[in-house]
Image (cartoon, rainbow, N blue to C red; front, top):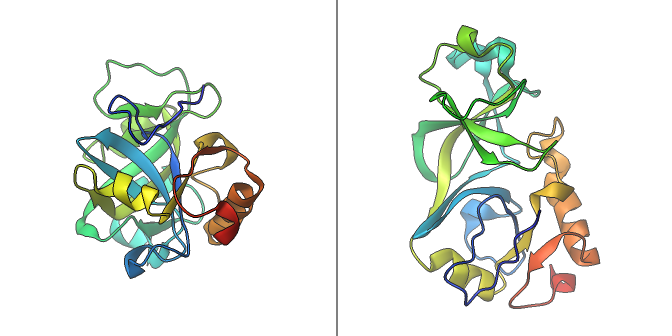
Length: 198
């Protein structure tokens, strides 16, 4: 189920949405990026989905190697706190909301995605989560900042249903998302320059 995001509605949320950087976004940290918003309220937090690094998971956290999604590398999640790590994953079986090692962010059936507690012992999560992706750093916005960037035409907002955030081919994600936005597929809100200008 999609949420309608309305720029002037304080009760509306972008959690679970995909942001596609337009050519109007001047911040070089986000050039041609696709961001998944994990939290949106008094500010926003997300991870860049299409910036794999050359650092293999096996080199830095080998105990997670069995559970990671391909490509099995660390992704640059954003410009904030690059020494911090965020793990995303899909549930592998029935989801138990009482567990502290995995919390769902996107609950749509067949598209579930959540945050993994990377302090957990990976062997305890075998059969519980799959396709783990580890991000170094994150993207963060203060209250009202992201909304202002969207209204200025810096970001296009799409529903996550049209994309696989953990795709094995992240290099194509921006082109896919831009094409979808240009055709109007999955567009949640556009407040600023036309998507054709993206």
